[in-house]
Image (cartoon, rainbow, N blue to C red; front, side, top):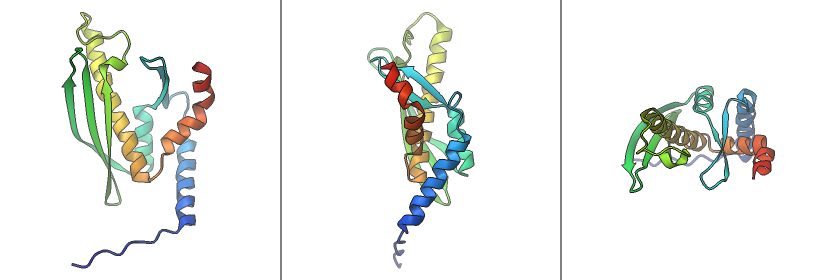
Amino acid sequence: MREKEAKIVNVENFEQERKTIKEAVRRIVNPDKDFVIFRGRDNSVNVEITRNFALKINAMMNLNYQVVDYRIENEEDGSKTYIVKVRVEKDGKYAEGLGICNTREFQDVSVQSSNAKRVYRALHDALAIAETRALKRAIEVALGLPLINDIIEELFKDKINNRR
């Protein structure tokens, strides 16, 4: 069987395509709805995309995605860690992303809490966040650029610096 010949990438075309993708994503972004700014347990400021924004990018770029694996680990402190693996397909090529979220990320919520509604909400949110993180990573790998992180940095640099 003959090996496939490597394609030589035209750097100018590659850079132009990356620029076009970033501009397209910037046009659909809504800074007030597509991102969440929150403080971590260590008081650091974090910005993450919402699931809706990840799905908008997924649809706009004509990607197919599926959750290919997930697991839940019970930690010694009673918290739960969700680990989700997502695969994105574009034009017959695959990219995978791994997302992790622990219920400790939600302040004032213990899995052993007596408030069942808050516990179930934290478990749901941790799974959804792990999936969104995995999808974000897979999209960036599939497109070959860290466009989501670049957009977060552009839009929220001042807010993040002012909140520290």
